[in-house]
Image 1 (cartoon, helix red, strand yellow):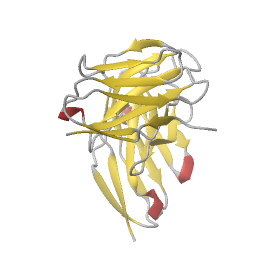
Image 2 (image 1 turned 30 degrees about the horizontal axis):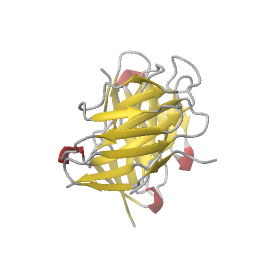
Image 3 (image 1 turned 120 degrees about the vertical axis):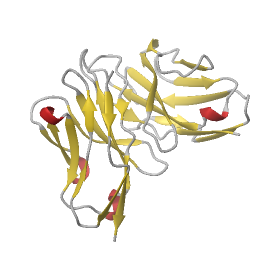
Length: 117
Length: 114
């Protein structure tokens, strides 16, 4: 079946521009996660959705970062007034959310590489 | 707070040789442990995971990992590497909650020599 898809795959923005990154999770997956991966680093957690509810946004680095999942499927990560330090790969992952108290397997998309000039 | 340490930034192995990638975690309770592989320009692919039970887990592509609670380790092994195994490998830990973002190590870059 189809995996997690993300678009665009590459985005170049001038400093100060707003960007929107899209994630299509695996159909039926309840949980959706966003991660930021800086060059040469491991992914770092940004935010988590259970269906349309954003239950954890503790990893968002500033109030310029905003995520939504209005219908509980597709999600958008928006970055306002981009800065050079926002340059990174943004990864989306989804999971089934089988049971409480269990860390479900997360399936990752290919990522969006954002470069801010 | 949980953390993951992958002490080796780069590892070079000859094709056909055995491989062990190290991972140490810091977490109070029983963790949920994962190994992912990332090829250039690709997302993360799950190799294997440990939730409970048998401490030696088998994964895809001939990989295995052993959970050792006493050493807080979850090292990844493969008896004979192939050139196609060259990639970045990430160890990750989860706490076992519903809203459970994974904590990743910084990764180990695996280079395969012919």
